[in-house]
Length: 147
Image 1 (tube, rainbow, N blue to C red):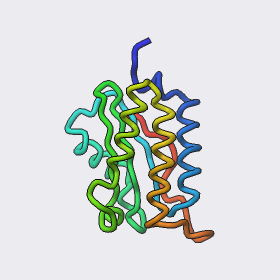
Image 2 (cartoon, one colour):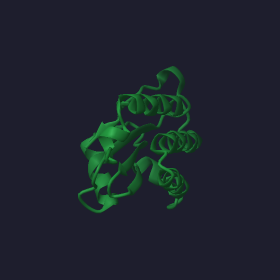
Image 3 (tube, rainbow, N blue to C red):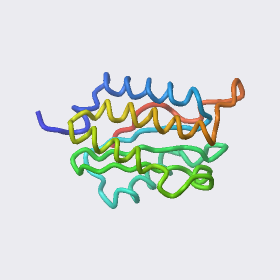
């Protein structure tokens, strides 16, 4: 079986990632999404920014959406946070999570790496964007988008 997005991220894997997102978002008003495809089709950060907008992630009230992007066959990952996050964090805010993803992906543990990175992103978002109790709404789908 060839290594590609569809066979790595089957329904069971996507369900695990959605559960990780829900758990991470339980402690923050931030919104986390994951997009997976085989090829990035352009510079990885440019592609991530494009998808961030295409997925409507820039429309959250606090501008606190985060997109974790994976291009399986290109061996590329990126994490992009909206303007509300960029305004309060240091420039290399996502570097540890990107390194973590790369470490897990090198071992072939795509799902485990993403689950852990999602949890770590949630922990970081909680510091700057704590959960707002009953007033907090899930503004974005937790579904994994595939390209």
